Amino acid sequence: MKKKSRILLIVALILSLTITACGKTTNEGEKQPEKQSDTPVEQKNEVIEVSTVSASDQYLKFDEGESFEKNSVYDAYEKDIGVKLTNKWVSADDVQFKEKVKMSIASNDLPDFMKVNATQLKELTEADMIMDITDVYDKNATDETKKFLSMDGGMQLKTATFDGKLMGIPSSYNPYQYQFLYVRTDWLKKLNLPEPKTMADLMTIAEAFKTKDPGGTGKPYGIAISKDPFNHSTGVTGLIAFLNSYHAYENLWMEDGNGNLVNSDIQPQVKDALKAMQEMFKKGLIDPEFSVKDVEKAAELLYNNNAGIVYGQSWVPAQLAKGAVKDGKVVQEWGVFPIPSVDSEPALSQIGLGVDEYYVISKQAKHPEGVIKLLNHWIVVDNHPTPEQKVYEYGKDLKEKGNNYWLLSPLRVGKQKDNNGEILPKAIENKDESILETKDQKTRYERAMKYVDGTDINMWWEYLISGPKGAYSLVPEIQNNKQYLQNKFYGAPTPTMADRQEILKKKRDEVYFKIMMNQVSVDEFDKFVEEWKKLGGDEMTKEVNEWYATNKQ
Image (cartoon, rainbow, N blue to C red):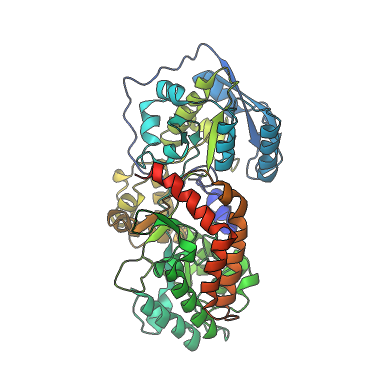
């Protein structure tokens, strides 16, 4: 659940409707766990105090008379599990939060627990400033919590483990978030074109959208792309999935077939993908000004009928709705498809590990068990709350009013897997809500059915996400056939990585863009590979493989 970057429209559309992003998982999927007889019993009669640090959020609105110092969520934690929360400090926003965390570490002035990034987790471990929580976790985490944080086979917990010691709690989210291909199906019908199954099909469609201008704008393109297409936070108008179609990947450590890891950015398949992008640019299938347009500006090509192809994540229909639904009518028809392959081998969607931040407990904390109690309770109230526990989501009146009180919970973890793809399309197609299992599924079903029943045409986007031919419907086949590739390196950044990674990425993007925009020959890629190696890439690869030698599965 973690949605790391706030995409403009998805925040506006979804966050106001349901609690789904930025700290809460958008994907929930398993049955409510049965109560376990050996679950640790909470000692509610003895209140313990636990300090943390927090960040203000523009989407958090306090009820009158409440603040970070005193609010109904903190009161509920104290009442329900006997943990009194205090803040050592509260930052103005997330940017300031990260700076203040750095200062807290530098001055060795830590709260009992706080959230840090992977590099800081390693530094704090090496500086002996945080607690080995192996025993406290094993003793105090409920069976439900242990199962919840091990759905991925324990990979995320391994990223927080050093020399066999668990040094942090992964701020987990679902790593199995795939990208898809979205195409204007009304234009396919208009031009008598088949749905895309291969990259050859996609190129034919893109050229037809350009030359025949089915949108009638006089300024047609094939595909919409924005200025930061190789960034994972670019969930729509990006090109990572385009790379994947050519069996190329963005900054992913992958096996070379000889027992070692290599970085995907310098593999020959990338050159093939860049050559294809260059050809598209030369044919005018890509907006020549894409390199200066942010996501929203690039998406205007989709809204305004200038382009009819875009790659992106499962929530992309919420972005497309801005152009697809006008004055109570659906004026654009979009279809969602698996990313096509350039050859007979299926394209693999690249995925991460689903964790890049961790909750750590100071070595000076008097009640580390209190942090685990917060973890246990969050998993319960976020996944199967009782009516009274709605306070953790909505505040004291237990009603949705856009306050986003869930942001007050200082320790939040998301689900690592879900079964939305198996449940939602079937439930919506058959109008059978009896098979719905989670809060998220019930919310999505209700929205999609408003579109199906014609009571709210604006819910078109949810139908294209969760319906029988929606993005989620494609997930089971990807999962079952393992049509994805996960990063094989899950350690903290190596010394060279920490020092040179950003320089290497900047150089990479510079060369990629010049090739894409036909400013240099595609053979410049070969020169880039040699430069990448000399600028620290070889040393970084050596460090990664030293780590891999002792950590490979």
